[in-house]
Amino acid sequence: MTSGTQLGSDPLIRKLSEAGPLTYHDHTVLTSICSRPRYIGADHDIIRAGDPPSDVHLVLAGFAYRYKILPDGNRQILAVLVPGDFCDLHVAILGQMDHSIASACPCVIVDIPDSTICDLTQNHPRITRALRWATLVDEAVLREWLCNMGQREASQRMAHLFCELLLRLRLVGFADEDGYDLPLTQTELADILGMTSVHVNRVLRDLREAGLVVFKHRRLTILDVERLKAYCSFDPMYLHLGLKRSDADG
Amino acid sequence: MTSGTQLGSDPLIRKLSEAGPLTYHDHTVLTSICSRPRYIGADHDIIRAGDPPSDVHLVLAGFAYRYKILPDGNRQILAVLVPGDFCDLHVAILGQMDHSIASACPCVIVDIPDSTICDLTQNHPRITRALRWATLVDEAVLREWLCNMGQREASQRMAHLFCELLLRLRLVGFADEDGYDLPLTQTELADILGMTSVHVNRVLRDLREAGLVVFKHRRLTILDVERLKAYCSFDPMYLHLGLKRSDADG
DNA sequence: CGCTGTATTGACCTCCTTCAAATGCGGTGG
DNA sequence: CCACCGCATTTGAAGGAGGTCAATACAGCG
Image 1 (cartoon, rainbow over the protein chains, first blue to last red):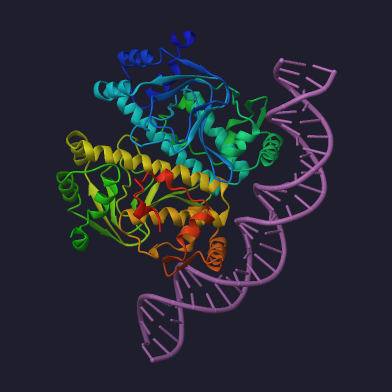
Image 2: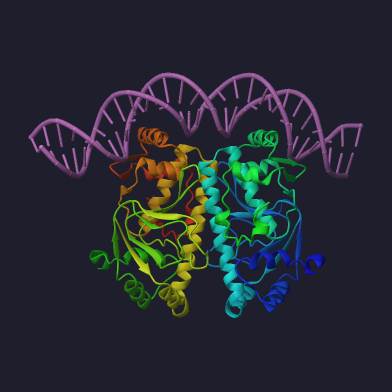
């Protein structure tokens, strides 16, 4: 059972398999790509805005996030990167990063040379297709975040984020039955959701008192998944998951 | 002078040239792709959420926008598509559209068969690279919109949108010295900016009284570009334009 | 055991929404 | 040419969601 040995490449393979079937050979290719992981501490920049293109980075364990510091000093978090997510599959074409990426907690990442990516695109059509799929889903998530920010009010917005992370973490095996570890401070949640940390705190209290979720010690316990989804009218379509019944629901 | 004859493909070529030099042959290829334009009226869906993959669509004239209707009936506009912009370079890989695209005014668009896109990726490396560039810039714009929504308050948010559109429209030759046509209602602006149309109206009055812009009869007149940029701390880096001095400033 | 960063709560304020009504305006038919 | 309709715009008054400021409690850690 591979699930027991917990290879570093496991979340990547689980995620990419969602795009379409991969062969055993594809698996070994992906595993070998992940063979030289690197460990970084919490709150370290992985890439900084303005950086020129370099290797592609991939998160294998831990949480990272894209962010931008605006001229007025405010920070907006643009994406949460969980195990199996790529940081920058593309920068090569754009001259420089227009945002930064930082670790939210101690992380395991791999640096993938451009040459390896080239090799994939030329010799591994299923993997290449899966990478394109991953990029498109990232973009779809970004669009949903924009909807979330523009149209939902604070508490549903937060509930929606929690639902999304639940599905994404389940996909890569990082969610339990009753919730998941979410190594973010309330201030970071605030910068994700476009509100103040004070208000995050109040909303968390409301959600707790509503019997939906409890967020304590960097762990999110979901008391009632279905009610949480209903609460924010969560529609997972944008994640483009196959939605095998067993994974998608309760 | 090509600028006089105003070929349909002109905005596309101007835009893609921003990604890197194209040859004369590339130009003819792009022009031939645009040889069968289609005219659609205002407020028509070009693609609808849930649609399966079909041809790729390209806007040659007029404005369109991506949007999503949330379960509560609210609409969020996710992107404004101006001449030279693609609607859906990718859907093929995702099973279905997760959002819709509609025309904001009468538009000229072209339907590009997948086979043509395949041909491009296989035989026209410079164009392929330019298409990738365009996709990445679209994503960068989306990220900036998320910042805008999350961190800036209404009036700067609107100013920022106006600055962005100015640069994007200049790139394709659809902006004048003193502003540009912006065929959107205040309600549409509201759904772009995540506010009510009532508040859009008030913010427009404020910007007018501040001597920054006048929006009347679907035309935006910019009274003072530099002050408008300063007003919202506009930093065009995310558009990844070459920023030839003459185009970028004054 | 004190230090530091995070979480929590209260009081007050403001930006934006909601609701409602009035004004303007392009088109259409008489 | 004018009356009329539908739609977009404009403005006012009142309420609410969320922000700001500041004090307190708490947890991890050397």
